[in-house]
Length: 173
Image (cartoon, rainbow, N blue to C red; front, side, top):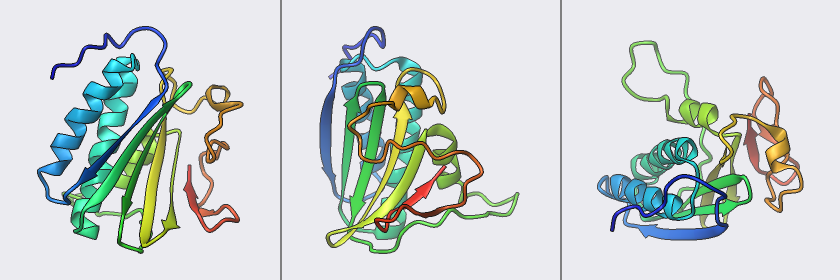
């Protein structure tokens, strides 16, 4: 199936859920499926590219660290696209501080630069790692999420240290 969306116009709300086997091959398959689905929803191309990278990083983390099947959920709501990866590993992610010459360890840093917000919280039998990308083309425009029904849409300014939001969820700028 080829993408049928043009990346133009107003995005159409919706959700796609993929249950993935946890093998490395599931990462590019998820990325392609999400890309087609977002284009079908008329999400602008720049946002589709950011979401593709976020999907890649979060799914790859599930493959590398949880090493079990995982669930990918992508939701379009208004001007935002939320990506969630649920796995059965209870350990919450910790952004790494890799050496300058390290070949890995920058995935969560990249997610933090592509997403308006991201975080993680415990879930039944594991955890959920999530990121919200703005579909309107802006990086961290608070107004795009004003009035959003998304539960974690509260803005979190840059420079804020990772912390709990009172419900045991880790939030990152």
